Each structure stands twice: as C-alpha cells, then as structure tokens.
Image 1 (cartoon, one colour):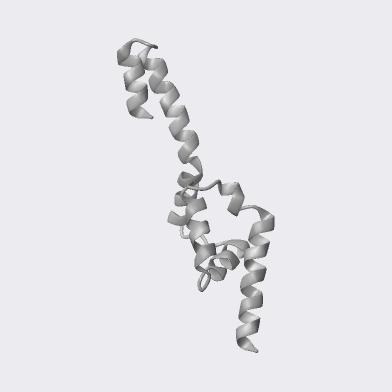
Image 2 (tube, rainbow, N blue to C red; image 1 turned 180 degrees about the horizontal axis):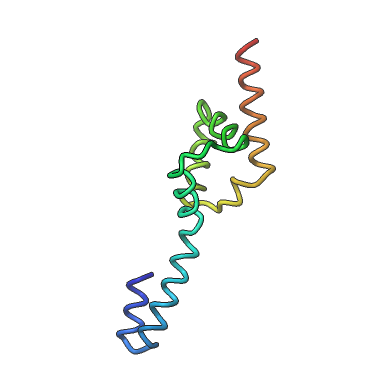
Length: 103
C-alpha cells in the first residue's frame, strides 16, 4: 500500500500528500483490530469468559485452531469465525468432546 501511494504521489497521478494520507487511513483501518488486541494483551488484563472458553476449546481441534488463527491474521474474514453463532458452536463442540472423553 505504501509503495503504491509513493508511486502515485511521485508519479504525478495525485498529490503526494493526498496519496500518503490515504495510505495512512487505509493502513490504520487494516490494523486497528490487531492494534487494540495487542494493547489489551499488553495490559495483562484477564481474558473475558468467552475468550477463555474459546481458547480452551482449541486444543485437540486442529481445523478450528487453524481457522481461529487464519481469522485473527485476517487471512479469512474475521466475522466468519468470530461471530456469536460460530463461537457458540466451537465452545459446544469442545464441551461435548470433553464429556465423551470423560465417560
């Protein structure tokens, strides 16, 4: 994105200031979720109950773990994984697997 903005500005297709300002806006939009998550983790605040349940549901389920990290990194739409219905399914699946193991 930055290279494209510099090319636009230095190439004369638009003013450099405008191209760089647009780059900054797009960069901030693309990274805001990760930035906020990093700030929250850096504060060492405890996970919410739902976050804890999701993290506890991941071990032993490689496909769900893969989708979790793909969504966190923006490689698949975040809303596809981190929506209430899917999170409830992930937690319920882990709970039923743990009950099956215990019996």
